[in-house]
Each structure stands twice: as C-alpha cells, then as structure tokens.
Image 1: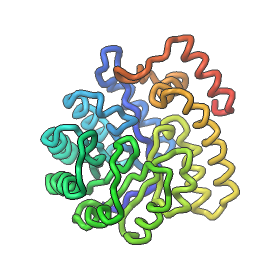
Image 2 (image 1 turned 60 degrees about the horizontal axis):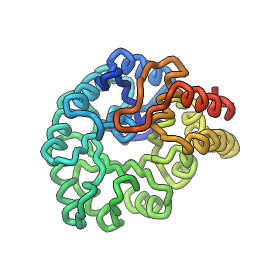
Image 3 (image 1 turned 180 degrees about the horizontal axis):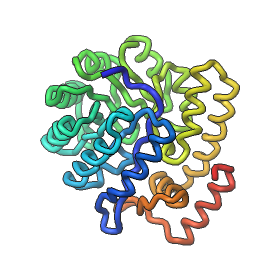
Amino acid sequence: MKKISGIMPALITPLTACEKINVPVLRSLIEHHISQNADGFYIGGATGEGFLLSTDARKTLCEKAVEYIGDAATKIVHITDMNIERTLELARHAEKCGADAISAVPPFYFEYDEDDIYNYYARIAGSVNIPLMIYYTPSAAVTVSMDLFRRLLDIENITAVKWTYSDYDPFIRLKASRDDISVMNGPDETLLCGLAAGADGGIGSTYNFMLPKMKAVYNAFASGDMKEALRVQREITCIIAVMKQYPIISGVKAILEYQGFDVGNAASPQKRFSEDEKKSYIELIKNTGLM
C-alpha cells in the first residue's frame, strides 16, 4: 500500500430512527465526498460512533462503506473494542472486506503500562496483513511516550499515526525520527499547524460538510501559498469555535441534514437536538458564512 496521505473525512455514520445503519444515505454521502475529491475515508471511528454501535452494525458499516468507496479512495477502518477478541474479530473482518488499513486507539479506562500497550498493538498488527494506524487522542486518556511510539513503529505493519492532539512538539519529533511513516493531523481547527509540522494530510469530523475548505488548505499549503492556506484555515477555525459550544457529532449531523443528507440523530445516549434547538444551531452556523 502506498503511504497514507491527503484529506479524509472521519465518516459520519447515518442511522435510522431505530439506530440501524441507513445504508442508502451512507452510499449517497460517500458518493458526495468522492465527487469532492476525498482522498480517503476513516470509517467507524469516534466521529463514526463506532464505540456505540453493536458489533453487527460495525460490520455492516465496514462492508457497505468499503464496497461503495471501492478503488476511488483509501479505506481505513477503526476496529477498537473494549474486548480484545472483538477487536481482533473486527480487524480480520475489515481486512476480509477489502479495507486498505485498520486503526486502533490505545487500550483505555483501565490502567495499562507501556508493555501492555505494546502487546495490545502487536497482537492486533499480528492478526492482519494490512497496515495498522495508531489513533492517538486525548479522549482515550492514555499517554504514549516517544520511546513507546518508536517501539510500536518498529512493528512491521504499524505504518501510520492519527495525531488528534493539539501539542505539536512530540508530533514534530516523531515525524523527524521516522519520516517513512504517515502522520495524519486530527484536530480540524489546526490542520494547517499539522501540515506545517510535517503531517501527510488530515482526518476529521467537520470534513463531512466542509471538505472543499479542507482540500483548499491542503492544496494551498502544498503549492506554497501560505497566505491562502491561512485565510481558509481561519474561516474553518471560526466555524469550529461556534460548533464547540455544542456536542460535535450532534452538530455535524444537524448540518448534514440541512445539506440534504438524512443521517439521523447521534447514537444513544448522546445529545439529541429538539427541532427548535436544531433550528437555532443551524442559524448560528449560517451566521459564520458556511452555508
């Protein structure tokens, strides 16, 4: 597989009223992103509400998303479950479906030392023959030291990191020590910071509704037009500043609904907007100039 790079939506999972995968909407959303030149998709991660879905629903999401994306873009499937056997089951399933790579957060909630984390990733990596991406996020509340990163990246098929931290000092040191790996920026509001620090691209939730803006930052940076990259990044950051006053996934789904995609509510027990709340939220977002 070629090096992971480019601009990739952390794909929203469309849900029906009974919280089943809304397959037709999933297809239309993927086709829309492909028409806007998405370089890849991150499937079933935090934005995709993977932790809140049943194993069967996660498998359906993986199967259908991989099918609809086909060869048009890179397909990365997040497979972490609190239970390691289900994690391995989802990893093998993703490979069987045709995913280009899998991704996993560190083991969380319980206390783990560095050997525990290393063994966890080594076991996942050893269960498949496709690349594994480390998903490093403060949501997991697990610190991965630079020494541990180096150990993990010596495992043959661990070839990428999704860096969803706003601290770019270790990011820069990590990239400097292993330029052969892919490091994808996670925080949408600091995509340009990540690119300047050496990121190979970005993966994010707001890419679901403003992919062209994210592509504009990426392309302007790649062509050396920092003024334009900064101008668009400022627009993005101002929109996200408004969004951060509300639950992010509920907000992203509300915006997509306004744009014509019946993605449903956030999975239980997340916040669900009333119709009045949704209307007020959309008005705030419209006032940013987004729509």
